[in-house]
Image: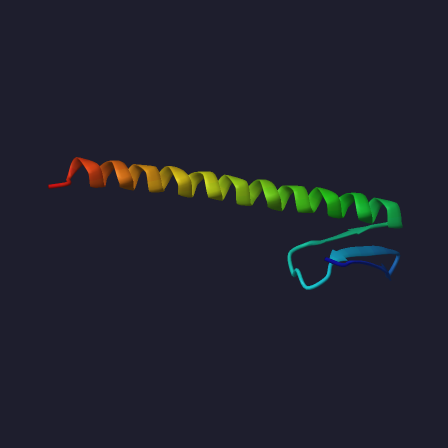
Length: 70
């Protein structure tokens, strides 16, 4: 995984290469890196929440299947 940090106008754009949603802008290089870390953590939290909902849905489906088994 490669992190790119480029000068962009009056600030810096930090992004994870080949990942369209993982980028952050700030007025200093250090702030851009810090903001990118926050973005990555937020995306990870989102995916973990999605995974937990899918696990709960699977469990509910399995419960329904066992209740209606012949």
